[in-house]
View 1 (cartoon, rainbow, N blue to C red):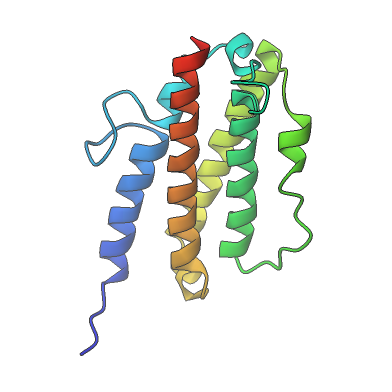
View 2 (view 1 turned 180 degrees about the vertical axis):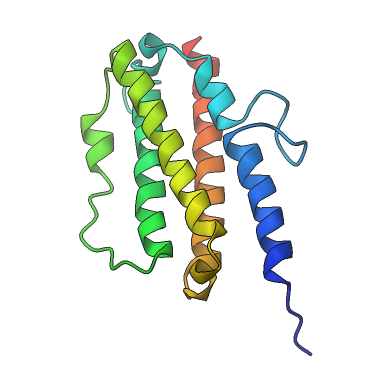
Length: 157
């Protein structure tokens, strides 16, 4: 017996969880005020520029990595051929940020998130064999890095 979940039901649940992860807690799995954008709003460029330890990246690098991941996965969701991605570049190059750079980084992240939301809102996206796994990967990957950022704040502040 095959059980199908209607696309509308799946995407409604996906969008609620993405909203909680990125924008505002809905009561699904995060504590109030701990979504990614809510968390980042309280972080200064100075704090974002501090490495958590001698072997860990800065919060600025974490944010740029999440943004980069969203951009790559958005391309995958749109059926683009993605090759030769340097996943380590951001970890090697992003560290210190000015206040302006920090705000710009957050704006780029927000724009990348909006682009992903737009792609996931398009029914054509769901004809792509990678759509469900890509959407879940975005959710899980971002939640992981949100946890890293929130845990780092315990050390940095």
